[in-house]
Image (cartoon, rainbow, N blue to C red):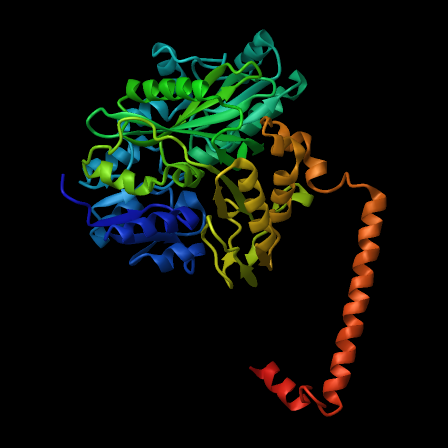
Length: 504
């Protein structure tokens, strides 16, 4: 196959910027697409060319296949990288790219058909002998049928969108009296996110871990896995903190899950990067959850411990190259990623769009900030509020935790509210530090993570200390200003020089 010359990145934000960086390193030109809300976005500034594709709502811009393809034709792009979300798992878009003679950097449409819709994926995995969570094999048409099935297997159950993942269209039902409202909410959210309101039911496992296996396959049938990622720190089924290696997996369990993940990918003729997701129960039994037929948000932690550029791998596989490895590389050290959101954890995680007046990104060794924002940028209110991903590497898990906490302590964003303090709370929590946290961890410890369960006496002491510090600081500042305004004196600074500093 010919080498790819120009890639249109059919996405926005940090993932678009991240893909473009690898393209530049490979000598490949890039094209950005943007909505009217993203005219000044970082991904637009990073690309070699940029094309407007519509108004702010994603269903009128980033999700309109015809506009994306027209932008590729207009700019002469010979390939499209979808990132994650939007059209990344849309089989009809893959077919449209093929028809237009444009390389889609991802799996074939047939693999998406097999694994993209969650109920069909379950059916295929059952045929392949992969263990799955008990639940319906197909979407359920009516709320009456769904209620009857939930009553049969017993609550708690999970209502899940068949047409996509990322926590959209998911509802946990613990009481049957809440079933209908949860059903309506799940279908509505699924339609808005994926244009498909099909919903199915799974039995909810108590205190499960969410562990996923990164798989990679080339066009010649070679398939390997690149170890696992622990994704159990979730809020509303959306991952917040990810790490690798998983603190609960033994080498034997890792090898077994990796073998099953490779089997699942091979069963559908998979090509490119994909992730097979599992739930692991308290007895360390694991069950297939779903397969994400795309690059994952949390792929940097895998890159840290393997030393690989997964986007570069995606491009090379799309160009027809063979995988350079025949088995999983042994993980080196430990990596943790935290997702930084423009949201207020104290106000039920309400999004906090607005202008970023000041931004200081942490520095230091073995630290990476994948970001889509900059000082002066206005975070729009029409997209997911994640603004960056901060990831670190260290030789051990304890060292990685401390490095991530230190980095978060240096992260300063002014003008909008973020979850930085909340993330520090997660990394400092004893349950996280010990490593045996499950998918209900953030919900269960919400008040503690917000700092609402602190000792009142300690809080009062901290408040008094801050008042004393502020008073001493102001007294020192007032004394300094008095000395400088009285003529400078030896070593002093004159009022004229002070004025000049202000103007500069």
